[in-house]
Image (cartoon, rainbow, N blue to C red; front, top):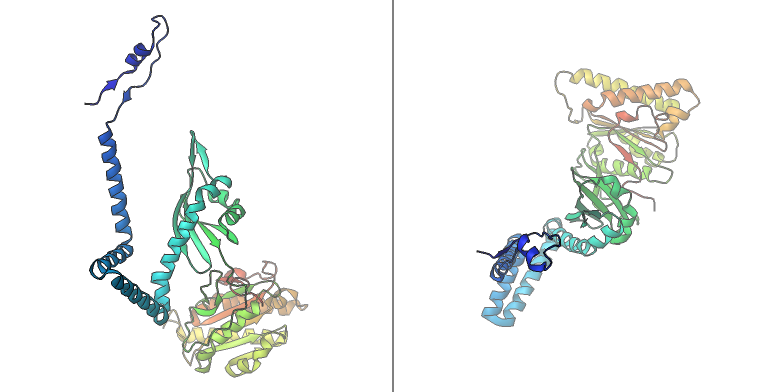
Length: 409
């Protein structure tokens, strides 16, 4: 049994004056040294077992290296390393997507987490995100790190009482502290946030055009690259798209990427494009394509007539398909029709003829509210997406920022 020294004994032991007030202290328990050693040994063994369980690949590699060295000395180790390198190189060249998913990204994520862990306490303290409570410094917990070629997603467990706005106000401090270009704060789940740390600008250079797909997916047409370097795709079938961006932001690039991606189904008769180009300077380059596989108009009156004719054809198709199917699959008889309107704000807000503006807005409103189920899609581009300019903008889903995936060269 452990020896116990009570507070009263301590007071009598150190108090030689019988008239002095007693000083009461908490009991002192002296833990034997063998218990301390046993606890530390148990903690060390638990840490080793946990490391082995969490890193099976590293454990297997270390075991193979030891076996090769034990049985064949250094030649076996060198041969094993060369074989492993050859396997990884073949995997990388033959199946790059699988290699990136299984090897490159996990290794990069662990390396980046180690990098952030080295600077974590210092950055959190200097950025004033480490809170003091009852004499203790409470630092946010660094969670999982998911890395891509350009962006790191860092999960952070908040200190009790913090909110994402606290980190959003310190985003610039975090970016400079971790040595990245940009830091964005995303809400994850209660008590957690995700820091989106941009290490490299994937859109700094000109992105070459993708090859024309032979059988494109109308639910995910490739148009460019995201800010993290991954593929950016846009859904057209069963949706409508509104592209907003300032002059030179890349709206025309998105339109032409959509046209390129639809070339194969246009040639097979499954897709038609009705192109409206009131500016006369964007879609006119593809007039031969649109005249062959759809229709092209640039005069505002002719554009209005084309939109109203599209409404008539759409309603006629709906009458034929009513009661037979809910979501239409494009066929050569009833193809997927894309109504592509560049500078739509000129037709809905800036054209001097008020009657023509109302006709355009009525036609677009009908197409966006009734066209989805019968394979009609409206793709519109404009510079000013305010409600006063585009009163039916909420009927288009999704709305796409013109600078989100492409930038002018």
